[in-house]
Each structure stands twice: as C-alpha cells, then as structure tokens.
Length: 503
Ligand code: AMP
Image 1: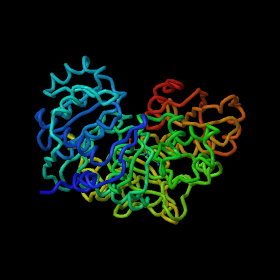
Image 2 (image 1 turned 180 degrees about the vertical axis):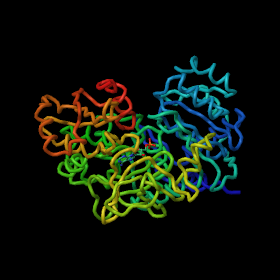
Image 3 (image 1 turned 45 degrees about the vertical axis):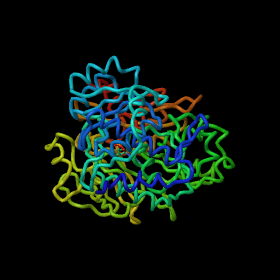
Image 4 (image 1 turned 90 degrees about the horizontal axis):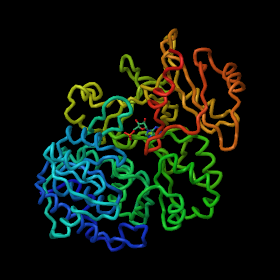
C-alpha cells in the first residue's frame, strides 16, 4: 500500500548519506536519524489514539522534534494542524473546538492554560518545548523506530491550515497529499533544487511558507536545511557561508540590507534568494541586486493554494511582479463583478486552478462554495494584472480596495507614489469611513530612520500627481506599520486605529 507524501518526501531520507538538518548548536541530524524520529513520533501518536483522518494540533516552538511531528502525521495518515505560536489560549480553543483534534501538543509553559481546553474538547494534551523536550518526547523515546505507514493517496487530507484571518473568522484550509506533493515537485524543478543544496531555514513552521514551501522542496530534492528557530540577524549572517539558498519574507531582506556585514562577498557562493508571503518593494529588489549582485526571485502563493506563480530561475526576474503561473497551474484575472476573464493590462480578481488548490474550508461548505467555483477556480481575493509577457503584478487584497464616492482606488498605486517621497520609508493606504464619500483614502507613513516627513509637501505632490478622488483625505505618521509574523501589513489594525477620523 502506498502513502503518497511519505513515499515521496520522507522514505528517501533512509538512503541519504549526508546530514539533513543542521542545528544552531553545531549538531546535525542525518536523514536516517530524522526518519527514525518520524517513526517514533508516529508510534507515539498512535499510542495516543490517533487513527487515519484524525487531526493533530500543535502550538510549539520550531524544533526538529516539531518537524518530525509533521512526518509522523503523514506516516500515521493523520492531518497536521499547526498553530501560530502567538495565538492566545482563547484563540487556540477556537481552533480546537472547530477541528476536534485527537492530540494537542503545546509548550509546557502553556500546558496549564491549555489542558482544560484539551479536556473540554476531547483531545489528549502532550508537551514539547523549545529544546524538543516534554511529555511527547518522552513518549516518543519509549517507541520503536520501526516504520508503520498508513495507506494514503492523492485526495486524502494531509493538513488543515487556518488562514491568518485578518478579516472575520479564520478558516481551516483542507490540503491533500496531492496538493502538497504537486507543489513541492513543481517548485523543486522550477527552482533547480538538488541534493547539493543547503537551505537556510529561518521561517516559522506553522505557516505554509516555512512548512510546505521550504521543507517539502528540500525533502523532495534531497537538500539539507540549516534549521534556525527564528529570524536572528546574527545567526543568519553566521550561517550564510554554509548555505546555498535562502527563503524569506520581504522583511528578511530589508533587515539584511540594513546591516553592513551583509555584502557581496558573504553571498558570492549563494545560488538563490526567494521572497514571498508579502509584497517585496521594487526598491528592495533593486537595492539587493546593487549590494549583492543577486536578483531576488519573488513568488506568490497562499495557504489555500500553495504556490501559484514564480519569477523564472533562468530569465528575467521582474521587480514588482510575482512572475508567471507555475507549470500545471492556471491563473486568470477576472472582472470581480461578472467573473469574465480580463485581458493583459487590466486589473481584476486573481483566480487559480490546479493540483495545488485546496479542497475547501473545514466545516464551512457555504464559504467554500463562495470562493471555490464549480469549474475548480479558486477566487483568491487578490487583485492583480498581467503584463504583455505574462508576468503577474499584485495590487492588493480586494478587501483593501478603497471605494470612495463610487470610485475604486487601488492602495498600491498611492503607496508607490508615497514611498518615493523624501523621508518616507514605507506607507500603507487604507479606506476609512467618511460621511460624504462612504470611504475616504487615508495614508499612513513611516519615516526613514533619523528623517522627518514634511506632510504638507507630500500633500502638495499628491494633489499634482493623483486624480482628486485618489488623494488621501488625511495623512498620519507612525513609527512602524503593524505586521503579522509573516511580515504582512495588518491593514485591519490601521483601519481600527484611524477609522474614526472623519465620523
Ligand atoms: P497566506 O495565506 O498567509 O500565505 O497569505 C496569502 C496572501 O499573501 C496572498 O493572498 C497575497 O495577498 C499575499 N502574498 C503572498 N505572496 C505575495 C507576494 N509575493 N506579493 C504580494 N503579496 C503576496
């Protein structure tokens, strides 16, 4: 009997001679070491009553043991439910109530708060700390490392990943073995991954980027990973000489560029820098190339779809775009009102179809029908535009579109102009309630370190360069934009903060 993901991603670890995971303390795990940990964790899950199809939730630090739980859920035919470590116990309870996991793995520091949650919802609670120790590890150590693998095929669920839920309730995206494997194979091929690669892994593993893009691509290609607990600038700079690829969110790249130690020589041997999860400013792209000689490869994806588009490995990596559809993935830009496909150059809703696209939202058939068409196209909620060469540029989420006096304003257009102004490091444009216009355009600016922003001068430039309805009706200056752990600007937080300006 076969198990699609186990056979393709994990079983090959048995035959690997070199190291698989390099850790910050100087130790490393070979492929067979890690696979044995996967098998013991699978046995531990079974000992806790986990059967195929059961959910296994975890809110734990990033460790090899936590990664082994991913392999263990695959081997045991279970469904991985990773949770952001920033969630409060109350938030965790919401996910546990929704998904009824059989097991809830938590940091020992949270076990007091979360054991009543587990008890209320019929989950077994076990612990795993930032050193990979805890009651779950003890249970693993008592198990055999013999492989017991449940049969699973393409359509079987492998993971339930809750969307970050910046508007409304988080939804559990159901991802199958086929979804994950097709994307891992496509990305490994497109980005030319091989067994000689060493991926510098500093992303969290509760999110699709760090978990599936980074780990699955490495597993699919036989690459090794330098597995760091989080983004630590010094640790990254120390590890770069041993890496061949870095995957990051845009803030990784801006923080690296802020440090003079990050120079051409340090990264001369690197093969690839990948960016995604939030927009990479064209300015960062250009500054990165000037400093290092490397062009960052930007790609676009989301929890529900895995990765959809990528700039080319060979060929032009176009700043300000997320590249072309990956092989096997269809991407359309459609009229948001009618769903009719739009030609290149016109802005509309990005829709995606392919083996990468999820099967629906857990327990939300109505929401699934709203967003996943009968034709198989998923309505992403992102607005974008193709250029004549087939590169997609994203202009923001539809929910961030500002409709003022009946006119549509794409925040990105105003933000690009604001970012060019003297003293402006970055900007966010939002819509806030307005008695006359319904919504008004409102700009939030962050100054460059040590510089001052002349709001009146900027206002004057905007008046000259933008149609009246696009001009911000108010401008605020703040120290920093609110961002989530993946570096995405939380416009909902800004809308809450500045929403009372005109009403
Ligand atoms: P998540 O489900 O947390 O991965 O968030 C997915 C969303 O992140 C997408 O729908 C986009 O809005 C955004 N996103 C991902 N990659 C990019 C990118 N390269 N540029 C701009 N936005 C991106």
